Image 1 (cartoon, rainbow, N blue to C red):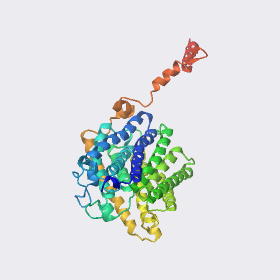
Image 2: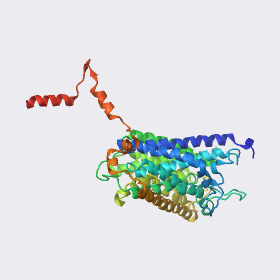
Image 3: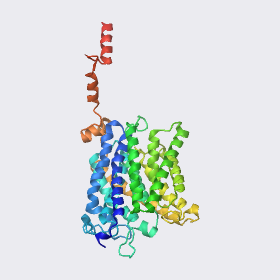
Length: 451
């Protein structure tokens, strides 16, 4: 294989897709940042950017090797030394796609997965401890699970991959298990370890900036075309079908969420629209190569309704999942992964029939086993890591910091300088004369009356 064998069109598509997926993490920062209160927005966004910076380094050092090195543990682990520091990959094309293009594409999947977890512990986590958790969890959980799901055996048998992809043969085209179930289960575990926010269910904890949430959701939808269609690893018909399915399912999910809100709450909200978009994107991720566009509409519509109802479970079960990571990513990922067993059709690129297309239960049980295995593994590991960090260096901020706002204490910054805004208003001019605040006029008049 020489450089001349590289397909420039496929390479351009994968590098473009990688850039689109990278944009999803800043999009997630806006999405999450708008959903929290003003006093913690910077901390929330920093957790996403921190994950981006950290995983960009660890993926090169050892993460890629653990995920895509030749299997050394019965389908559970890639050889962590095989591509240590990406050795040997700069000159190796491996196929019509340069190895380094694939490295970059998979790196941004690892980044967004870690960042997703942070929404479950918004408003109450130490930034430094979060970074340590991200390092340990990605090493012990994400990199191995990526090997399970994304590392395929080579056709000549020289490379052995993960057990979910090759032995179980569960279909997860772009990361319903490795990304969303993985992150959702970890988010649930950390929410339990850190406990409820002060004033949860008593104080209003409304999103402080819904336009930011909408912008973030739009960027996520935009970047997700690289996430899903890029996973075809070629600019071909499969990528085109996946692109259309991603568009269709997402729109249907948003409509399903809004309809649920309208019936239940009498209002269709912008937060609901943004959340429905993300729920649809999550659900179609594992199934986008195995369903028809009509199947994508059904799958997405159901996802919107199910996730809209699932976000209320935290109030019934008593866990504080701040930004609905469990209700959207864990539940949406479970539904999207298992739904392959129902809606898959041989007419789609994956070439498998699900239960509703006469394929019986064969693919369905495979999907269930894959989804549950990742969920349990991620939850147990995240809980153990989070618990150990909480009991040693502390994971949750102090009560005083939580009440004051993590931004000021952890980062010595605030997202909005209200003092400057107020000062500007007091120093304003009207009609050539200095304006006097109404409160000052009222105080002066009250003093005169009292005298």
